[in-house]
Amino acid sequence: MRFIQEHQIRAIVLDIEGTTTPLAFVHEVLFPYARTHLRGALVTLGDEALHEPLTRLKEEWSTEAAPGDPAPGEPRTNDEVATYVEWLMDRDRKSPGLKLLQGLVWEQGYQSGELIGQVFDDVPLALRRWYAAKTEVAIYSSGSRLAQRLLFGHTRHGDLTPFISGFFDTEVGPKTAVDSYRRIAAELRQPASAILFISDTTAELDAAAGAGCQVLLCQRPGNRPQPHRPFLTIAGLDEIG
Image 1 (cartoon, rainbow, N blue to C red):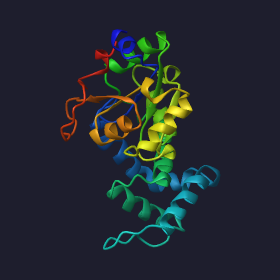
Image 2: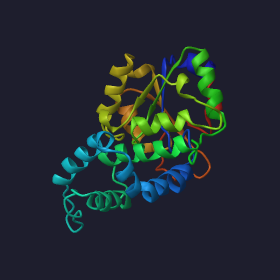
Image 3: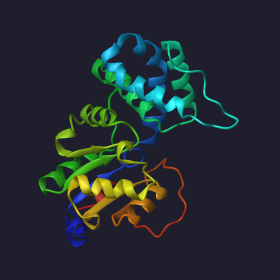
Image 4: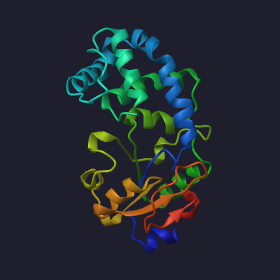
């Protein structure tokens, strides 16, 4: 655990896409699955499960402002909700309502065995290594906390959630906002300087560094090219020991 000890790291916060999980799994498996099963899920999930995401979606729709790209009509019926959600997905909006609904759809997929969470092979080893060393690990993703727990709870390596102490989504704020990382530090009860944030996106690392966190850029095969920044880089979590 030389790197962790030398940098006095007490907690590690991990991004998902391109850091713990291949981008292709999110964009070529999870997103298409949500789109394909969306309309059926709106029928089968039931009013109680759908109450929060539908309430959020309606609230968001009422404030939607996209000049030249107006949102579809008010989402009242299942068909109207599906049309609006598909519109959001087409634009890769980080809508909390959308993320909540996607999580519920994916939950059905994981429970049925149609979905298996994908993580890079070095991830389970790193999580177990850090857990044994009493280094706290948390996840921060634009996907809902439910979606995060499902992904790490249903991998071919087994359930990895016992090694993760916290899950953060955009309820704490956007991933490119400095205050989001300050809130995470407060919730983890750690000084920002003792937190290491790892992501494949330099805009997120800029924000975390602005909050006082230590940062590493994860450069996995297939990750998107990033603007140059003077960040230390790693190719996998096995480099952090």
